[in-house]
Length: 87
Image (cartoon, rainbow, N blue to C red; front, side, top):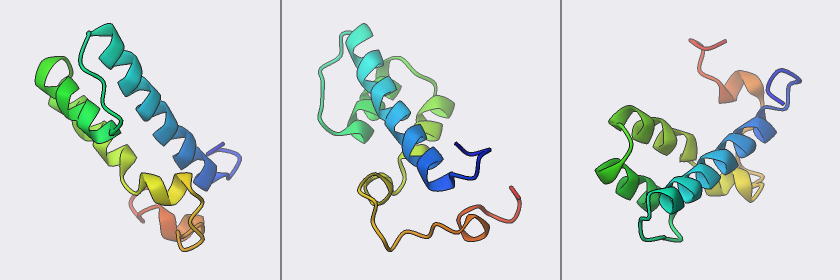
């Protein structure tokens, strides 16, 4: 999606993946489930995952609701969404 220019969709898919991964890891490691994804990652950090994985997951989840719920106020222009260092 990203390569095809669907940046908004790529962000949403990445966020959905991180959410699903937290559910999977919580189940595999027999941790108590939570409806809050960030809270699941916090518990996973305490028991199973490295701080780098935790920090990456939390960064990907930033503004999750705005992207997932198609908030029209979220910038969709690639030049404005991606920092100049990445372009």
